[in-house]
Length: 323
Image 1 (cartoon, rainbow, N blue to C red):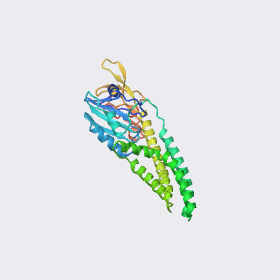
Image 2: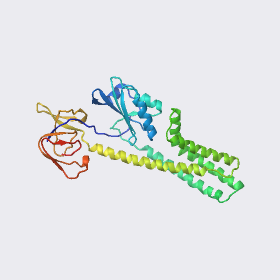
Image 3: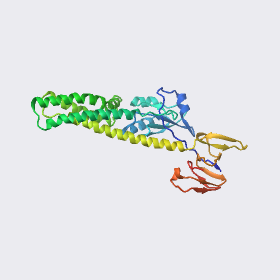
Image 4: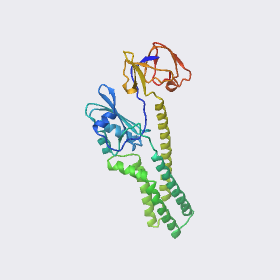
């Protein structure tokens, strides 16, 4: 079966990138040429975690000279930038000014989920502190007064300090980084709220007050971390699913030259007008039209249809279908 490809689609992979800032030559080498002097560069930005981050990055990059547009994928924490011209725009300098560390996306580098381990440890510490402070608070709620109440408040304060410092560090570091670069994110109000609750409770404890809110500040952190952990797990599952789909996509195809020779080309080098030879069991890498032959195509990956589709000369086929 042969087909003529009017366009090409690149398969995607996901991974981490090197930490060394690349030169303009490295950026251009890692970019994909889309035609008409248009290039696309994919960057990995691990610190992206909310809608405000997406808006901030996309707006800042879109203002750069020669940049056609920028799109952020929150699930994969990748930024795709389309730009024109001989000079590479200052992507990394712009992101650095915003407080985001960026790397060139490298599909060959494996990923290790260190964030999940950090979140689980933070949930465990905050959960332990919440349980113990709640036990002490029950006595205060039950009517403990005077020295007994003050003692329980001071013990609660001592338990809350390491819990907020360790488990809350995820929010405090993110909030400080945002404020240091003159922007806001969703962690700023969380960090302020937790800090004010603890400060108010400590003030009441020092002044022998009746009420302290150490249990509220630590339990709030505990439940927020649970939500953040679940969100991270779901995003990693979505990322894994996309990665699995991308691995099913064809990486290239055999091209039939005018002199009857055959060459294997990756998808990025297939151009409109080329004739491709698709053998049985191979996936069609690009959209095209059947020139010769007939075959049954498995379109489940593209359309979800389980029944094979019979195609012949003159019929159009889609990228991703299995011959």
